[in-house]
Length: 391
Image (tube, rainbow, N blue to C red; front, top):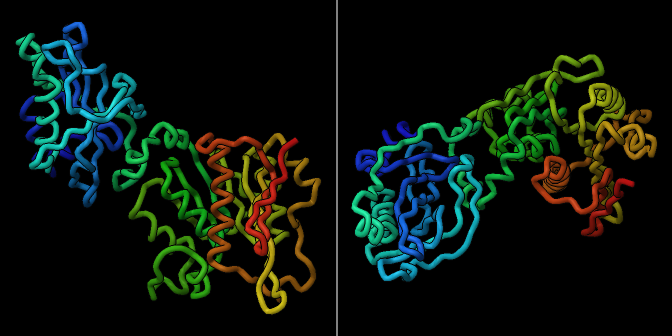
């Protein structure tokens, strides 16, 4: 990855040619083997870490003029901390645990720091100058390049959102996850969209229906005329495979006999509006011991306006039967079901999907959860979420 990046970025290639011990760690450029002096005037070694801003998938540039530093407070020859560094104590989780960020520095020269070569050289001059003066052998140009910095990303572009937010350790909680979405209609399409932007290893999706104009009005993304009348799975597969790897969407209806389709699945979302079909899918997932979230929505016209409820129900192997016994989820279709008015609105589909994905991310430990819940309801007439917590 490092040499591929250098082939498109002359400033990074210059750093390699200069002899810096470079590493790519997630979305950070790391320069290791940086000498500095501690308060006692002893020689220490640290690392400079800087975020990368992705320009087009191959070219990158510094996100800003600041850097992170793995090491103690650098001191000058006078035994005092080097001045004009700004910043302060901070922690940045990296994939490689041999580099532990402890602080940040901010020193912007009048001419700015236009590329990584200028930026790294600027900070090395400040941090390492005293050490190299006292210890001539303290050379930062060790050519100690590390080309192996963590797993290959599922994304075709760098996940600069994660690095900017400093949540790499939390995003790592999705590593190894294999998630299925049953139903790619209004809510299911938004669930898929949210999942695509996580580093889940594999995303599976199932929907037997075709993509029509009404689907476009309550799903994310653009509408291309040539998509109309094609299977939803095909439309979304083409739309998202340019963003990431590990996504497989199939034009298929899931029932209780589909064990093979869920081999290896670690979590599932059920996003369909048929009670009879839901019952078969529930039977399959519970039998396979797969935790899942089921979503539902019911809107009616009241006094000339729409009102109703959004439901998100969490079922895990340890509580699925108990939750089902509360009859919170319809598992059959009423007479004349095919003629009912199925009112769904894009923002409510997105809200339903957001709550469902939030519940999944709590399950993975990405979001904190003070009170685990198995059923969440939102009344559209009141901006409140009603939660039924686990016992």
